[in-house]
Image (cartoon, rainbow, N blue to C red):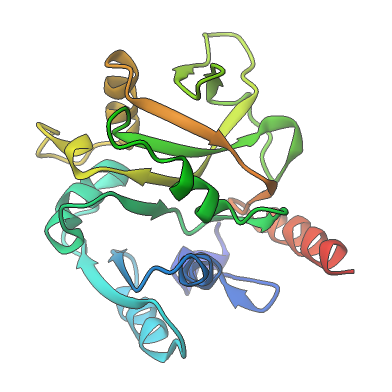
Length: 223
């Protein structure tokens, strides 16, 4: 996201007049979430000040990674004492979506099966995603169980950056910075990684150029 992130952390980059993190928090609020844990590292005071000025819910609690960036998995593992013992939503700040007929976080929650799953990922079709130009992440069977894209192949689904995770997903996880992909692969081996297909249009805002694409799609959907 450089040069935009030279002066602001990525979650504060604006798309259609709202910071990326606000798009995610708005979705959580609509899903009935009352408290969100936000991890901070780069320019944390700017993000903390922004969250204090937010006029609506959910309430936010800070998980501090100023001293060491812990990667996607390690950051959540560090925050688990703040999250509690129950399954929880995970949202990446650089991914959001235009809702379809069925709100995606409600759909994700309704699809959760605590007996069968340790993680449930919200998946976007690779052919209908804005700002994403990769070859996909996962294949999904009729029951929603996931497996990785074979090497040198193309997969129909990409992880959207939204999920429900159970704290047990992090049992015996590394005590060093690590990627969530380590735990995704472990859950695939035990048959406990599942997915649901997103309803609507995924907007992946990973580059400055993707901001314009996302804003155009939002404007088109509003029209």
